[in-house]
Length: 621
Image (tube, rainbow, N blue to C red; front, side, top):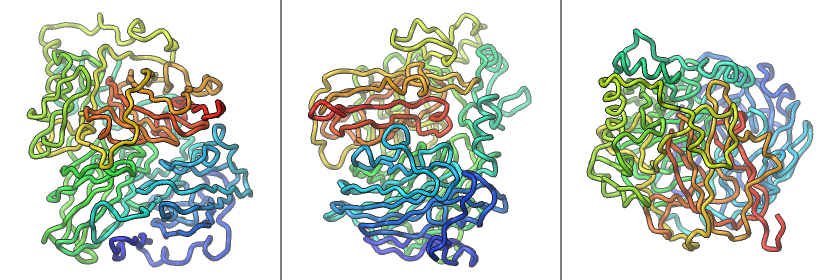
């Protein structure tokens, strides 16, 4: 499949590779998509790829069908007849009316991820609106107040897993801050032949059901017998990196599997803008283009000062815009390797249709360390995660309060420190039996203690400089949050008036996830409340061994990453590393009720979700 030529200011979206996909979809012919079950395998075949829609009135229809990826058939939900759904292209300053018709047999919705809008238009059933009933049409209408790369997806049930998502670009009212010759979207996602409700059921009854990389006595993981016994005594798995891996998922680029020929054309010397969106249900990706550096220019739709890297981790729902300048090679592979290294999404930068570059083999799976359990062995208060290697060290700035930033040291030191801690304990014969992995005395009194908490981080430290699991010991330049600086100064640089500490809690064996030990169903009437225009610092403490991408609807926050208040990067998703903490500053200036949740879809539905209420200037939400 070839992406057509794109000018600097206009993107022609990608369509299907096979001639059968090129036919006009049912929605464009005036026919509704199949009205069936939310995840049925019947109905029409849903093609990969997407068209483009723009203007002040846009009509969308949600329907079901089936998808075939690399010969495997699975359930599908499509917006306007394709997965991903159509690119919606808007312009800053315009008004837009989006009419969404539900052709499913159950309720649906669309959430406009990252957009600033009235909370009634945010599209979260039970929080901002009641949802869209079968056969009904709901009209979203709002002014477009920003520019950048965003996306949209269902917030109803588990529909996102089956394909209910699509890209959204807002062109700025003025000039772009960077120049480029071509403009492409790369939307990463995950496909499964399984019904997502089956997946959720299996996760609840056996959290490791989909983990095909578990350690055994005969595996090749670099662990000693003593280290293996320690993990066994803790009843934990060092390979518990992602809940669902490549044996269950096929990782997609714009709806296409690695063997289905996704490509982007270029001419040597051109500047190519890649808008990379992680639209997956449950997957982290480590993105690199072997032989070609990438310059990060935006994060979650917000411009940042350009920083050159060779690889970066993109958590679920995160967005990074990058500029690349291909050289004289015939092709370059764009590799989105899953964080657990069980598979990859793949696309090609090609100088001619059909040109292919060598695809690198999957790297060895990473392992969790003592540091990922919140055990700070011998590192004191240092933020080893801020360490970088190579030329990108100049992009890392001073550490957060109480932490030291060792920019001259290598990525591997943070993992090596944690690994050596376990190794030293093993060599000394120390047992983990005496170590309490669930010492609830370490938790503040407002955390509810119960069966939903099976681990408490012993010494969680700020890891804003951690490049992410699997990338701590690579020899090239890797992005971390400390390297991001806002391009335009932040408007509100007031000191926060208070600190709000929230604990990410869970029981992985029972697949229970929560904030402060309270699953969403138990706290729906007890929202997190902010006063109008209040300036708050939020500290997230991860008491689990999994990385969580935490998303706030309706507002941007600034990461506390060691920059001055004016240059802290603005985002709406932050990855909180295992056993660690992360902080952001928030100006609560968007009144209403907003969702706040982990963007791993099955974690959100497992309970890690809350409502944030911002009281309006008149005293009401």
